[in-house]
Structures are given as structure tokens and as C-alpha cells.
Length: 286
Image 1 (spheres, one colour):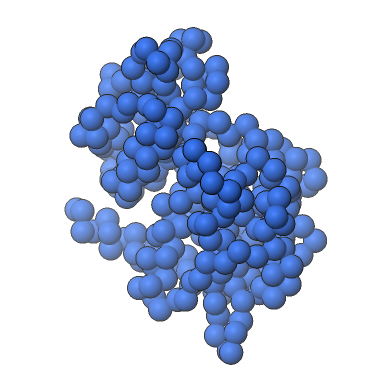
Image 2 (image 1 turned 60 degrees about the horizontal axis):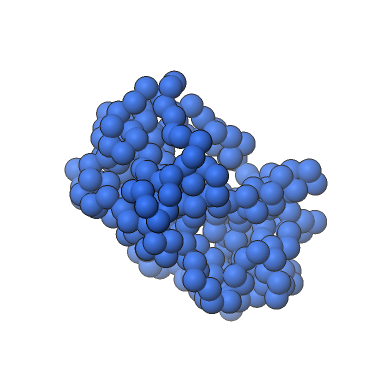
């Protein structure tokens, strides 16, 4: 449900508005043939792209790792703001491929606005080994948000075949990493207080914009979050589990494999703190 592709409302290709019903790119595009490209997905609230600058900064970092030259940042901002203009609430996909030839031709940029998918109420996760994941190892594309999501979507498919909504990726080391398209966290009780834990960026997980929003909102609300490197056994001490993503916000996870979790107050508190932080940031832009 969280991965169903909706019809685009608007589409721009290299800054030119095109009819969403007939929008196309050549089959020679290397993003299509090889997945050689980068992307961002962002939320729009009342015509405003939320945290547009951090999204574009991450896009630039990803593109640099692949040697893709992006259009000027002011052009990217303008294209995204045009896609958001007049929209109440939606999502924007910013897709960049290296074009028809990564060594000879310019990048191709698609900016599309799209209705939000149906909101899930809770999520169930199937733990799956992710041998393709960095799991803390250094490599040349560490942290890049590339178009190559075949492994991740293969994990989602396997999870659904086992009766779950989505997957929880486990590294070769046995450490908990992230979901195929979202960050995760859980709550443990220590000395009578709730501590929120989430896998550390040192594991090579995506430096999620929504994850950072959670850290910022937690600081505002006096919620303690700490980054950890742990295995699934740590969940035996957890009282709640949650997922964080641009489209899912803060979503309660009611099971990880056979381990059940309640929809608890601590996840709700984090969700409310993030919503408050989001509202204040949007108000400062208006």
C-alpha cells in the first residue's frame, strides 16, 4: 500500500511542463536501462516543499558520487516550487538520470507532483537479510540515494509473500539497519524513563530527512533519542517500534517477525512532536 505508484498530477522534464498522460523519456536513458541516477521524494504542505534545501543538498551529494552534473540549484528549486504551487498536500518526485550517455550527454531531470498514497494505520515488518547493504563498510557510493532500488523492492516482495506489510533489513553482521524505504526506531525503558533508539548512521543507512526531523523534534520536546548498533535481540527489551519516512511520517509497527508491539503512547508523542516542529517550520516560511 505504501509503495503503490499513483498517477502524476504534473510533470516537468528538464524544466519543461509536459502532459502527465503522455510524458516520456527515451528508452536509451541510462537511468531506465541501468538505474544510473539519483532521486529525492519530498512532502508538500499548502504549496510548500518541506525541507527543500536539505533534500537538494542530499541530491547534490548523491549526484557527485555518481559523477552526475546537476542543473543549477536555483533551477531545481524553481522546478520543485512550480510542482508544489497550488497543491494542498501531495508528494514530489525529483528524479535525475545521467542521460543517454553518462560520459557524454547531460543529466535528465524529471520533477513530478503526485497525490499522497493511502495512509497506513500500522505496519508489520518481516526481518530479512540484506547482504547488499553496506552494514558499516565504506564504499564509493555510501550514503547515495540512487535509482537502483531493485534489491530493496525485492525485499518488500518477499515480506509480502510471507504475509507482512514490508521488510526490516538486517545486515551481514546481524545488526538492525532500516526498512527498504524508511528508517526505524524503538522504545526501551530505563530507570523509569523512555529512551528512543534508532540504528546509527555509522551502519551506512540512509541519512533520512524525516529521521533528522525526528531528532530535531525530540530535542524540542525533551525526548531522548540515541543511535545504536544492535541486533534483533535488542527488541526483546523494546516496548514500542516505529517507522519513519517522508510518506509514512511516524508509523507504529505492530509486529517484527513474531515479536508483537502495541500502538503505544511514546510513538504518538514523537509523532506529535514532529507534527509541531513541521508546523512551526512551515509557519516561518509563510
